[in-house]
Length: 180
Image 1 (cartoon, rainbow, N blue to C red):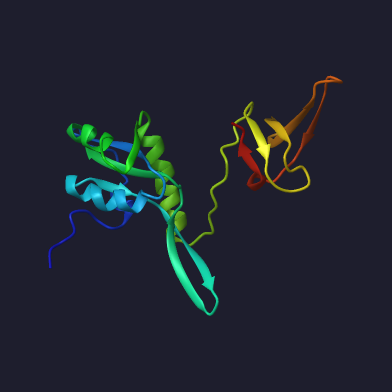
Image 2 (image 1 turned 120 degrees about the vertical axis):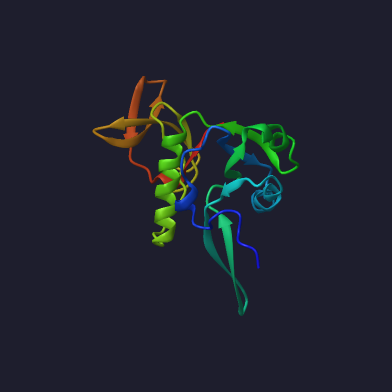
């Protein structure tokens, strides 16, 4: 049996790249994350696709599935010369260059540590102040609002333009989706 080319533990390889390598984010085509991870072995790329375990009940049968934590994204350390190969890959929709490598890797190490410790994780929309969001659940379902930071907490602001007034509400982030 041969040794794996790279360590399985992401905390071992989520480190800054040497000069000939670079970290990129591969935005995949729908439901192609796992296929891309397997396909990228041809180029000896290190990939990180954090997964969470989901349980599905089919009558009396129970099935466990590992699904990507970030749908549509795989983080990869690739040879700089292989960028074109990844851009043309049948499973890749877009290759995103990483400008702040240290910052991204620190965040990914934190995610990997949380998954290793089996801390329950959930992906929520990125709530940046000033961004318009649509409320997709709860009593305000269907409304559009703007994210604002008030007294150190994220709130959504509902504008009533006709009377030139606004209302601030605290809404669970799980009920928010970026407006198109």
